[in-house]
Amino acid sequence: MKEGNDSREANAIHRQASEWLVLLQSSDATANDRRRFEEWLGESPGNRTAFAELEDTWGRLTAMGGRARTRGNVEPDPDVVLKHLDRIDRARRRPRAAWAAAAAVVVAAVLGALLILPGESQTPYRTDVGERRTVSLPDGSTVDLNTDTELQVDYRYDRRRVVLSRGEAFFEVTRDQSRPFAVAAGHGVVRAVGTGFTVRLRSPDVVAVTVTEGVVEVTQPAIDHSDASEPAETPAAPVATLRQGQRAEYDRQATRIETVAPDDLERAQAWRRGLLIFEDASLAEVIDEVNRYTETRLVLADAELGQLRLGGTFRAGRVEALLEVLEQGFGIRVSRDDPRTVMLHASADNSPRDSS
Image (cartoon, rainbow, N blue to C red; front, side, top):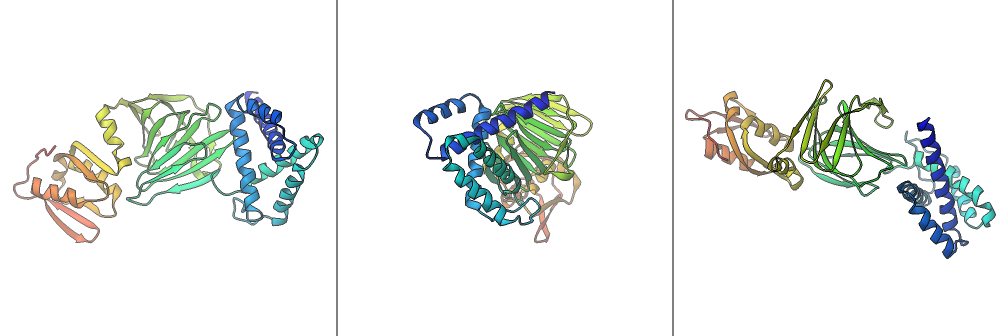
């Protein structure tokens, strides 16, 4: 019953927003109308969100004309789109008695546009190996994509959803109580209202979530990713609530939570500045991390080298500085079997030393 009430309330808000849009686009709007409109906007975040989305879609629909494409990349009839535009344009010049009918035209045109317009409602983003990218989302939230990352953004009037299918991303979320922000990754969903957090797919089944600001919830089970455009979610209670300075790692079976020291939290976020920072890390761990940022593969020819401990700050994607440290500080011999593979060999006098 609550779901039905929510749907009716959302429809009512959109209907009111469309009526205001028609009125404000017409020459009949008075100063008093604009004052009442500002009061309506201030009544709830949902009002502001609905009007902003309708106004944005109106603008894109007008600019697009007959160049829209459907989700399946099948061209719609341009005459149909242009007919909607013509009806909307004529609605601007109608007397106030016709506002309700004109609003119905706007609702039909805009809801249709939400299905056929390309752009932010269903948008994929990705980075190549070694690339970083910052994306601004329609609500003012931002996403920093780390190396070799892929995600899809699905924004609608009643939800904000991201599906992370590969890699790592930091989310700085604009607060909107009416539309919680959800990130589906692996076998869980991370939910937030206004906060900052990182989600990393360590493997298809293992996900790490680190919170730098605010509070997030992790729920399981998650989403069927077979159709990311229309994910089917099974309702579930939160299995973890994370606050600033906490990290959770989850898979299909369990969720593990730990508190992260401030220094460790800063190191974990260093990739956003293009840096990799290590402190008393094993060489095996260092190589696993460095290999994420370059097409050049570092390979341990001698497994015992992986136990060496080291520390330092390196520029992501630039392996030469690390190789110099390993050769000069640890006596490790470096060989290149091919342009993209670097083998690390133990020397006769190799012994575990700490360079941090």
